[in-house]
Length: 396
Image (cartoon, rainbow, N blue to C red; front, side):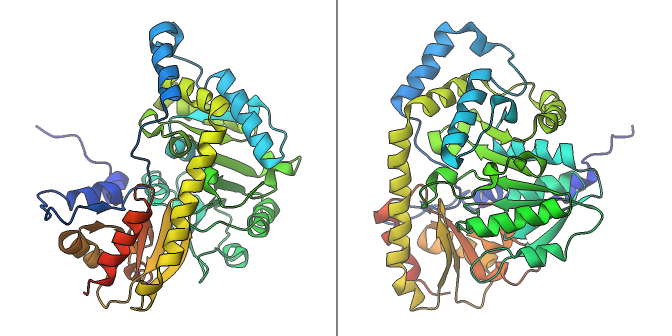
């Protein structure tokens, strides 16, 4: 009996998620008791949300019948309004709730944006090293990724991006603070990309999942202060990192209402509505956790400082700190072997799990073979010192 064609060729040809792949390296692994695993692979908080937020979710589960029903496709009105207010205060902007949509995670915000912007065979410009899920979604949708290699400061160049633009280009994508490199894109650089996108009638997609951990005070850019921002800018955000809501899957899009209408078709088809209880928690966080979130930000900044201050012993052995900020440090190693092979050895030999740069770059890119991403969201300053001690004492 003939079988249905499975799997879809584009899905089959898309690489496996690096997080999924790296977890396989741990299967059957037994480390000595005095060498506990340092898991630096995933950029997600391991602790649950604060008690007050959890109580708000629990109360809604018990007493708010609507929290168990279908809701608005673009999210609860009160959460959209609260997020618009937060954006306005943070960026000195003037958004309304109609400019904001809530999604089931920031990955879905990206997927909905691409679904509304691009058809098969269209192109987008994506700086590399890239966030792997962005590349995976583009591949599965048949959208061509035009890699834009970053320079020595791990910053993309608008002039280089301009040379990649064709009549099939639909968008330029930026992530700041960057995943995987950690670097914070200067306001002037973001503005130049915005001007480039506007001049070519492209969308500029700016993913600021990690904006709450930016080291700069005040607006990191002034794009929202342009009264015509929504003609060019599509802004993505995540509640997961700020309020430890990873399991509730909540993200957001800021865009023109008519653009959101097109994205709504995708969102309605995929999830119908964002998780209601998670939205209750996110709203409570926006209204009550500013001081708590400031403390979380300071803790991440302390860890960043610990990495920068403690890197000297590795630098003496030829390691390079290429970027550092938000949840990430991005480093280059001094060894002849590729980072992909070294990553597997590091897990077994010194109990360190890091993702190789080859997971963030095009196939065959020599830079990826020399690099690692260190996700330090779940290691404190003591853990960072332990990491550097293990790496400094290890030879390939």
